[in-house]
Length: 112
Image 1 (cartoon, rainbow, N blue to C red):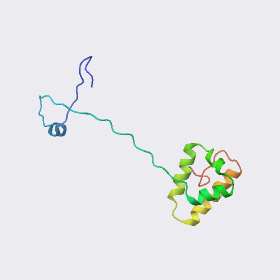
Image 2 (cartoon, rainbow, N blue to C red):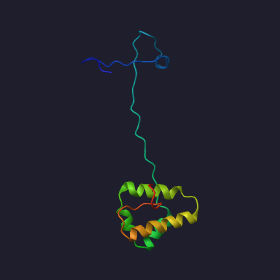
Image 3 (tube, rainbow, N blue to C red):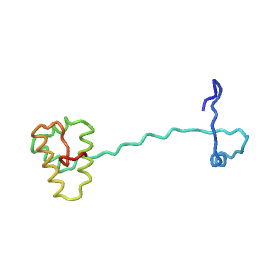
Image 4 (cartoon, helix red, strand yellow):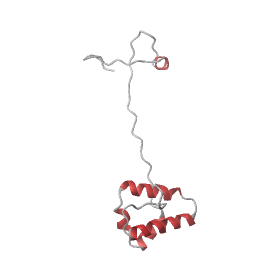
């Protein structure tokens, strides 16, 4: 922490002293690095969804959704394990896009 206009003071615990090969009352040099930001997971568009959007001519409607909305939908679809569930949810999504609903989400009635 800064001490007026002087150098910074770093409070060091025993583990840091051992790693820095120093002892109480001695001066030590440390390099402090900032952790890189966590990367967000990418959720690819499932092949079934891409095909269904293209056939229904709703690709642009899906692309017009907000980034957060698309991410939620894709996260949900990528977690689905059965083909039947995938198809059912794609149909629900297509229906909402056809009706130009403002609050498009799957599963319907629940937050994604």
